[in-house]
Image (cartoon, rainbow, N blue to C red):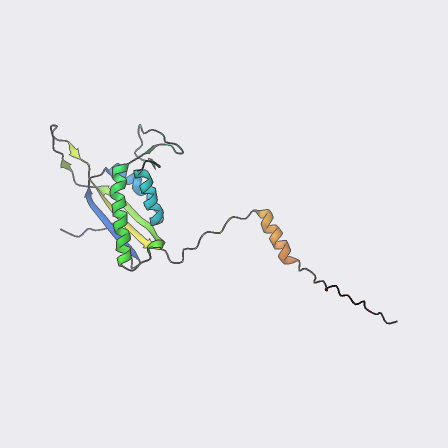
Length: 184
């Protein structure tokens, strides 16, 4: 078997995996790739598992002719077969990253691409029916020092906090039981 040529280069802190000639639709794999691109690996796995359990549909944006609307989005579908194969591929990329010594909690799907696979004819009574095939490549990268974004603070609270810092409070002397004697 020849080596697979990725569409982008991977650096030292990245791991990759490829699925060649997977028996999935290119159109559906394109939509699933768009669905998980840029997400944390743990979150992407959870999203794909939710699609397989039919709890969350994949939004269909490009190939959406005559596609029904789903709750909370425009066109969407439950692409169970495609998500199953891509989930296996994502787990493979995660285990490759772990083998390279990368932290699996900080992994992000940096690159995922779907491409048309080879054309082959399916068996059965009807002749000349082509099977659907697609190549899917995934590159996950480790994000160093992934800081959580700060919570938004309303302007009123920011102004109040800055005013407290600007005006120093006067220190009051503790009340003593002895009365001071005034000299005249």
